[in-house]
Picture (cartoon, rainbow, N blue to C red):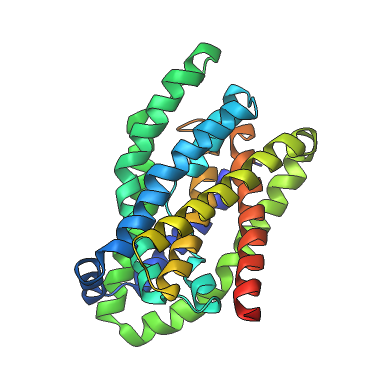
Length: 281
């Protein structure tokens, strides 16, 4: 069974839930507080892929895992980031806006970055990227569910609030189900490569959140904003990376999804430790 048929409904539900939480008036924060948003988007959309490129070369990853690491690095923020921000005493409204903005912006940046990465690393070993299929899939799975969620929020606000309560609690368990199924199907490949790729994705998370924290301090973000920026940069939408890697219309590669699977596990471990440390203070 191709895991794409599990990840597609999960990704669609996560993006629909993001739309349920969005309010157009919240986007005024972009103009009222531009620096936290600028730092977070720079960290997520520019810094993370650059760090991933350097680490992929440093760890000597093969072409499939190399492209898989770049893929998870250029995806938007994860849907659970607002929950982590709330637990860490961060700015939850800022978190929701950043996830929404990165989800829209990456509709345009992912095709560009992945096209470049595939040409540089993949074509020599037969890996190609059908850019048109990537754009169509992202629009269908990312943009359409968000717009439907926004529509439901404004047309039926009570029903939207009740739906969000259910879906927000399902996000993490659904991701764990996906990871479990993927591990069962590909456990040998994961075990054979977990040392190198696990170390690589962990280094990516740690370097990225450290740099984003330093940048936040440099522009004098508040403590709440800084915590949210760290979480947004560290938490990536692994479901989207898995959907792109395993899609029969794009890469059709289960191996390419392994960096995203391991990243998803480690980002939750690292950020839970981060939240725990903050709450202890």
